[in-house]
Length: 79
Image (cartoon, rainbow, N blue to C red; front, top):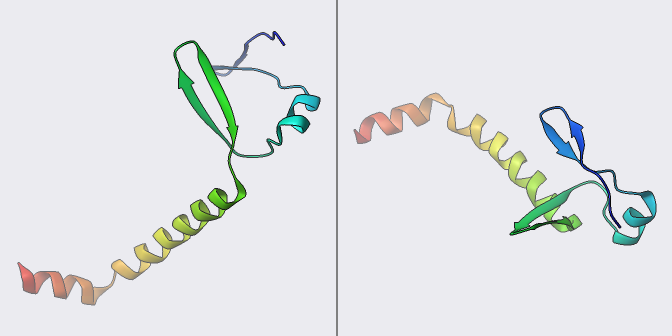
């Protein structure tokens, strides 16, 4: 199938017809891989999405845990 790149802000994109999306199994998140002369669009497995959400949640949790007064005292004693 041949299609045309369309302007999207400062970028360019393509419209993917619904039948192609249905056949590919792509829904929300995709990974883009680039090789000389081609760009591949690959569906992100649902397991990977959960890992990303878990990592982000862990970063938020760590940020609140690390910003405590006892942490500053502990680091000060090591310097």
